[in-house]
Length: 414
Image 1 (spheres, rainbow, N blue to C red):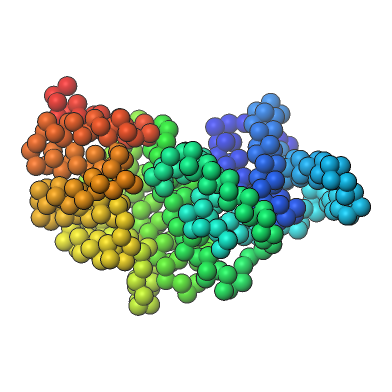
Image 2: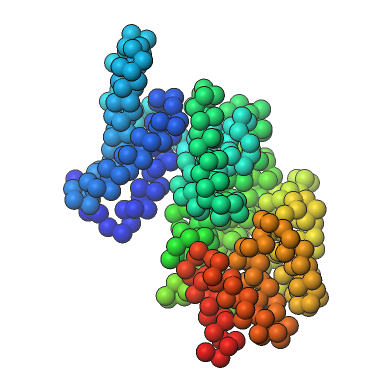
């Protein structure tokens, strides 16, 4: 019996895409061609499912369609290269969809995640490829995450796919040594997938719950694979402590509600408790890394019953440590906010000046948005209005743009 197509069906397709890609890539051992075949299967689903209903086994349906596309591709290659004999066994032994399903690993998506983070790739290329294949992000969304032009990111992903294709990487979970080698890139990918889900960089929705949920699920699976790794636990804690605020971040019309204005009774206390427990155990292991520090900052926010109770001196100290552990423009930006909360807006504005010459952030809307906020707190409303408007013009998130324009209009008395 089929199910009718509704507004949740597109989310279902997004969730299934990396699972189907993982199954097909493992079966045919050709990542690049498998990705094309899965995209064709997704298009077929978009066309057929609204008319015919969602199949009882949607993942199996997608795998079957993609596998047929792959089979056609194999046959085409056979004809073109005249190698029928060499690969006949592969095409003749194609299994039925039920056999493919029975042959699937419990979580092909996790295998795909580690496979994409291949040592033959540069860290940035591995992360970009995984965000595309596993996270389902568009090239524009990935470019925003990396603070580079979309065309640059498209070339990077294309080269990464070709490298994976020619490397002959087997579709399996890597060995313990390989896992350790690839783990930093894997964690960065999961962090970026979650970040895009929590604060979407493009479009009309502030949050994309499907991406955030998938990032948390994959991080839980990674923790199950590496239960004693403190940074994996720290990343999971960070996600849970941040995701706990999700229900309070938007109003009835999906308008953005900043942290200091959120109704904290809406925060998910179970997620907060789990995140703090994970963080406490991770910190006890002695080696403190990037994600544990960010989780500690999130925990300080979450433990404050009111915005005015937030321990900003502790947050500032954590950001100063984070700047030493993992320096970067976004860390500097957040450090400036914390410094302003402790020492006044003038101190924060002075710290922001260092970012004006950083090409990664000089034209990014967040720099203008933070500067506008600090200028407003300093009483320079005219300059604040200017920077709120510049930030609004630069963001590709409609809820962010609406919020920034509202702030400018409020100060202008409009």
